[in-house]
Length: 269
Image (cartoon, rainbow, N blue to C red; front, side):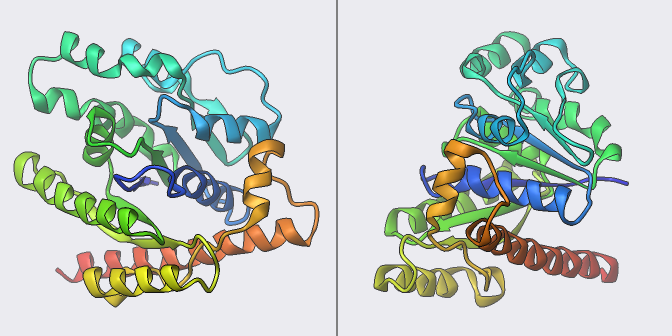
């Protein structure tokens, strides 16, 4: 078992990256019975909060920043359930850049710290998902260098499309400058309003820019239930909950198809 590592990203905030990171991890672990590690690389810790609330976890004693300072992430892994683990984040993680500059001399040492500490954990998981802030920063650099794939989240608005374009350009820069071995798994649309003209136009433009094969046919529709889960934690109590889960299960199925295609192409090379 060697984990496929996937960073969920866009350089535009508020597009749904954290929700997608959490829910794909949740469905892979709880429905597909895969061993999953969710890494929260955002000092706001929203992914950690949602997972903890959903699992009834009331106390998080150690966070990812503790792991970086100790040089060992294994000691900060929080077991959520049989198949799902979390490396949580907290506000103290805002000092990450200062920590890197004080402890590592070269750019390459600084941006590969997460990769070095995650590599020993990969044999224990099928998937590792990384949630990052929407910025060009030490957080996103470390996540890119540690990941095999990026799932780009595209909210149906112009700024999100520009953020996705910038993300792809920056991936190319990281590849050229630091030999980052990361591929675009796909672009996942998140709709503001199902059937809305702006949403449809943005998805069409994304298809023109990135290619039809690279834009997910499944989309995350604007569901009030997803916002409710921020307060209640993830539930599966009624048909509204089940409808929301099915949305992400469909996305996970398409992710599996895309990953299988990548593996087949690599085998044939």
